[in-house]
Image (cartoon, rainbow, N blue to C red; front, side, top):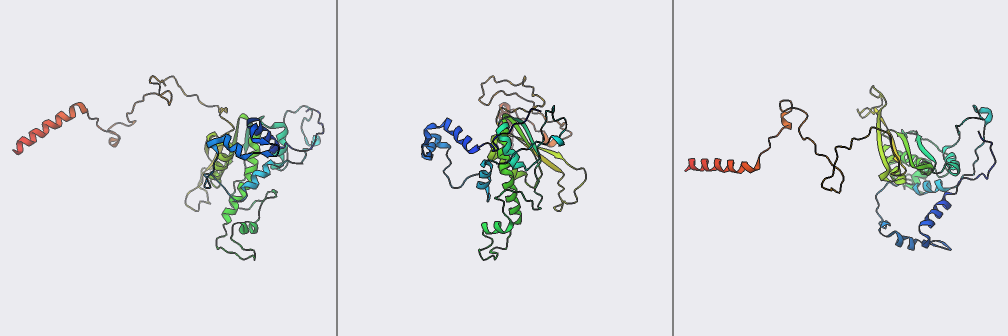
Length: 318
């Protein structure tokens, strides 16, 4: 391993980085006092969302969670040669510490350089978990913010929303970490996140917010047990867990079985792209699945047959 040198112990200032990136695109939106949001709104045109009601996931603490990801860390990574293996020749790096602080410290050296990230966060099964983020609220603070407890300490609502508090804490913990993880990814980078049914929907939504809904690669389901779970109180056994995959941009590629595109053509210049005609016959025979088979009527002869039958019937009546 290369010789370590001491550097200024402050992580990357992402607020300044974001400001400089925006200034490079829209220099006319900047004045000596900062950003002129009115000019920026004009430059963005219809892309500005001015409505009060917006589609998306929100919760108490989201604004603070976004800010916490931008605050620089004053922590320092300290080497431990005595606890390492092959210190002088290893190509690997193992970091032990609070993941939020570590993610911030990695920004300087690894921003936009990581090809793949896999994380296995808490699944939020209902038990309280505490993270040392300063904005994390306890139950009493949560009840006051949500109007369920007055300043006198008495509850003003019978619904304590304990599950809502658990979701709030989990979202506040996950959001800044995913935000920082995205900054580490290369343009063709991918992140895989393990989760179960407790927070799968919320995870999808915050990833839509951070990575963009269009960058969802897929949600992989895998069977985690063969026998029924003893905790299936709803009589539905949660036998599966999930891995949510998002790409940083459309440049990402997943290895897999290639699709044979040789049978797809576009002779009529369809704007949707190449297409192929396929056999619409059912997989089962008419004897096996008679309800899936229907006679196709030849419209060119059907009317003549119906007319002849009508005339014959009309003549009999007369």
